[in-house]
Length: 266
Image (tube, rainbow, N blue to C red; front, side, top):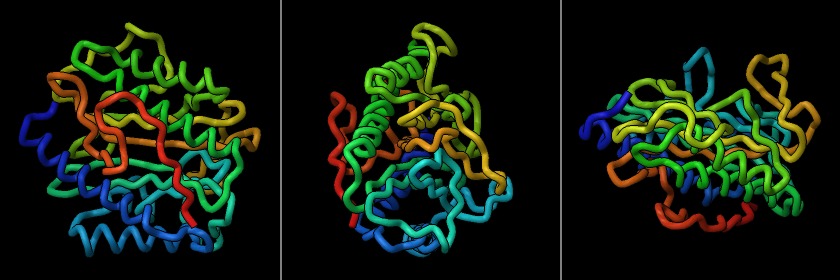
């Protein structure tokens, strides 16, 4: 379950490359693009620019390099030429990347054009909740501490936490032990140890937490039609705390939780 220093170095390299994929998307004007066009753009960047492998493609029979989850889609949104991003949408891109045999996993929710204040608050709260969970990671802490920090922040801000999907260990395989729940009680669950690597990826809804899976077998949506947002990072437990392997240059790093600069993507 724990990784050796040479494995952590390889995971950090995969994480650095994956962060650059989101930097590329940050520079992309999303309005008017289909989610399939974005999928193809990301695949070209990973394969031809980064000389890496999009790890999601072919995993469990999935045919694309990312999930594109739009508005009331909680997770696993399937890219489509008919799904075009419009002004006012929010969309989560969940992307994995494998380099030298090790996988990193990250996601970010984008504001497309001018979004409603409610949508902006949801996205901001979700980002902050992820960081609350990350700040809880240190040797000797427990998995319940992560979930409790996330759920407390969500509830304080009028959001609900999806229970059906969770973070996970990661390394040579995309999904390894342990499972990382985004709700829980402090002081409970597995004790964290130096060298553990896993994802923290809360999904928060504006309405109730209930979800359902659509007929395609992949797309998960809110039952009440409310907006949903997600953020995700791959993290490693270090001797002194936590290292965020997929950290992007615009993010706060290991200091106090800061507000995300939610730039509008035109």
